[in-house]
Amino acid sequence: MTTPALEISGLAKSFGALRAVADVSFTVAPSSVTALIGPNGAGKTTLFNLITNLDSAAAGEVRFLGRPLTGMKPDAIAALGLIRTFQTARVFPGMTARENVLAGAHLAMRSGGWQQMLWLGAARREERMLARRADDLIDLVGLSAFRQAPATDLPMGAQKLIEVVRALMARPKMLLLDEPAAGLNDRETAELAALLRGIRDIGITIMVIEHNMSLVMSLADEVVVLDAGSVIARGPPGTVRADRRVIEAYVGADA
Ligand SMILES: Nc1ncnc2c1ncn2[C@@H]1O[C@H](COP(=O)(O)OP(=O)(O)O)[C@@H](O)[C@H]1O
Ligand SMILES: [Mg+2]
Image (tube, rainbow, N blue to C red; front, top):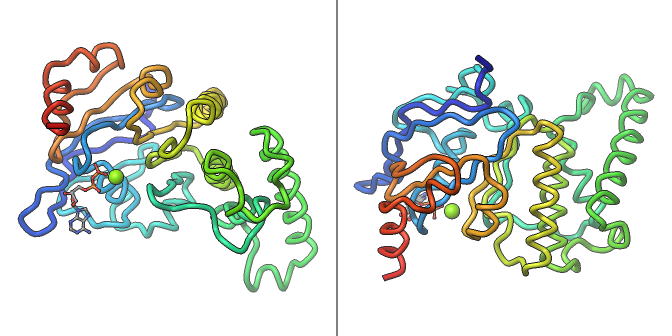
């Protein structure tokens, strides 16, 4: 049996009396796409915060590629190759698109600080390699024309792609993406879906929080449905879509 990319067991977190995440357990297979869905306030972002230790869990454990993450700092978790994007995060202002992408490499960069002073040559070579890689990735997602533009001037869809590309610069083994398609039009969403499929196909595991059901259905290998902090359904997209509790959770949220 292969080691799961991610094993979540018994995770729990409350804010005062509110049980934001209540005893959540599931595993994510390597090189797969898992969509995490559920009504607003279901606990999806909190779950990402618990996985990356941005919030401390009251109970439970997370293993990444078999290794427990308990007690690790968020940047140490990122250095293991578990990289996330944020629901509200956007591109860094005052930087070009290319500089934004390069900023992602700092999470994975080996030489820095005093090392950079002592081994300037190696650091410069690494910098050149990173710049080449940033340009290649920008080309790959069709944003070459925007490379030197202030990132905040880019259309929303392009900014979202830059965020994903920035995450890729850290050479992730797994990506946690919090609503990457929010605010995108249909064409931009299709471009993002193609990029995510390409990322999955080169072996990077993805867990994505997403509201766009057609994107979820076309992209996900596995769907996990959270409602009021608990997993209420889990399985292939076709099965989950037909689940009575899932339909009720969504209808209930809309009413
Ligand atoms: N830092 C916090 N302090 C208090 N309540 C919070 C905090 N973060 C999230 N919550 C609450 O926890 C619940 C889950 O929030 P969240 O994980 O952001 O949901 P989702 O991402 O599924 O929309 C919500 O009711 C939210 O208001
Ligand atoms: Mg959220």
